[in-house]
Amino acid sequence: MRQFNTTLTKRGQVTLPAAIRRMLGVKPREKVTFEIDGNDIRIVPSKFTIESVRGSVPALPTPKSLQQIFDQAGEEHARHVCEESATSADS
Image (cartoon, rainbow, N blue to C red):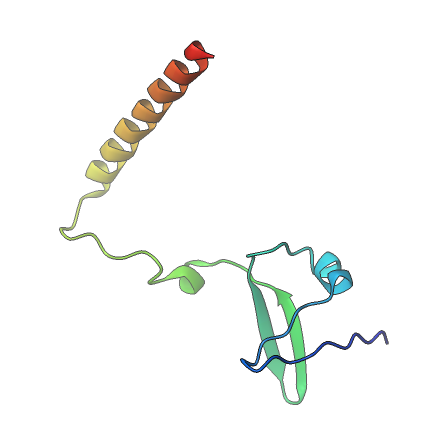
């Protein structure tokens, strides 16, 4: 078994050693999950599911139908493509 030591800060934080970050495949600002099983604790990369991100985006002020959402997304995508085209034409 390999062991890595790190120091707990006054705020209860630790830095994951670089070797562990590489083993987990996590990069700065990515999330990790602590899994607790009795006295054992595992650190694993976070898996994003609908349940894990629920509540991270505020609700719309007025409900929209799925068609309205698709229409708005299509308009925003078209606007984005036009802006990219204009930017690349200027270059």
